[in-house]
Image 1 (tube, rainbow, N blue to C red):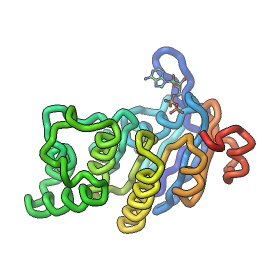
Image 2: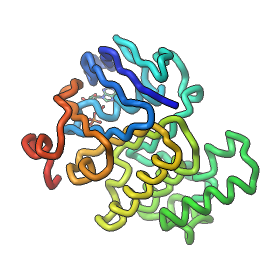
Image 3: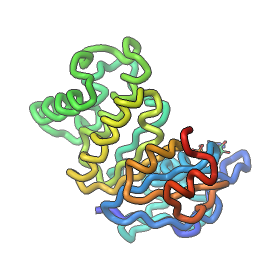
Image 4: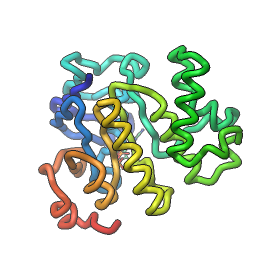
Length: 230
Ligand code: ADP
């Protein structure tokens, strides 16, 4: 499985922005960690480093004791839900959700079963043959979540996955994500700036500020820095 260790990791982008600054963070195998913090604090960068979409400028990043700093995304077995959905516009909802597991060469029957199950949980059963352009923002966001849920990765990464949904659907999907985490045992890192979501979703909350970890905080800590009710 997957224990993730950031050892004094810094990430400086080409324009000189220091998005992470000497970050030390360990996510234990099978843990569900919620990462919170204000906009620009480095949350997305942290996920992109785990996924292999960015390379640390300094420091070491290991998964299960292996330094992965230079390993390409396809070798990491990570499922990431991006904030901007990134759906394939020319593929149906079904094919968008099936895409990753088709690459894994699962049988057509298994693919169909997994996509249908996920679509039911995500309340997308009626739109499986639609194109992304025919969906609402909230539906598109759920397709992106579904694309991750059909997989059985070592690591799930979620970047504000429920921001476009109403409160009831959000609560439902948080439970769906939590259940999937428990069924698969996959290490999960979940980014949100919403305190209520942070408090309910995970085993542990960590908070970033200016690319550094602020002390591990509970909900009281979030309240003191102004995240409550956002
Ligand atoms: P968060 O997810 O907490 O909002 P990000 O990780 O997206 O934070 O961004 C951290 C900082 O890095 C911000 O100042 C952002 O503008 C900057 N940044 C993010 N991606 C890039 C990029 N590709 N090129 C240059 N700067 C970037």
